[in-house]
Length: 114
Length: 113
Image (cartoon, rainbow over all chains, first blue to last red; front, side, top):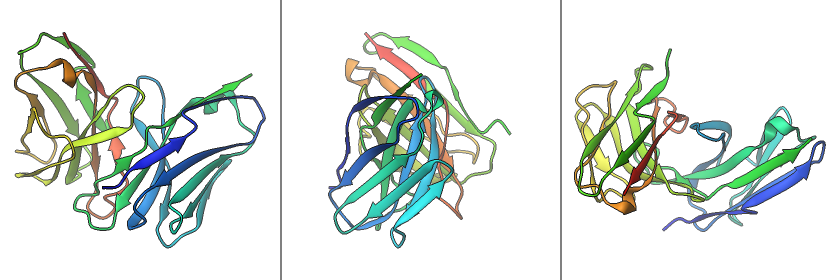
């Protein structure tokens, strides 16, 4: 059974700092991996999706990497801002799937202090 | 487009009561999903549907039922509410061509006491 773990559970940093969030998964037979952002009281928003054949994806100040063989992904946030404060979740899609059945990690709660 | 909408936003149930959580999407997506999120945890899939009339169990289906009579709507039914069903429930949808790009609703916070 696929298990997804995120470390740390919570992170507090001063504004402007570069930071890395970690995600690990136990079964490397994945189709892709996604990073989501969740704001309090709201649903999830997809930030980056990395296909299993890719090594990384970038969007603005965000960069996500994927090392499928070691079962790890990182989300790098450059020059963090208070508006980046949210919970970040990673999720994997297994290879054998119908209807895109995502397995989520527990999330990292990020606070960026002004 | 309204995207994915969920009602109600909040609900308190007594043990043994039943209720239906409503979910609708206006993007003509065939794929729809119900997740639950317990405090400090990730989302777990309850049920999903790949089209009208087709539903299947996810990871944690016990205590829930779903139906999909139209493309737009995917209600989730709790028949005999239990404290273990206290959670935040999210509905999501995605398109056939890109099923992994799921669009989420704002969630329903349910408390069973």
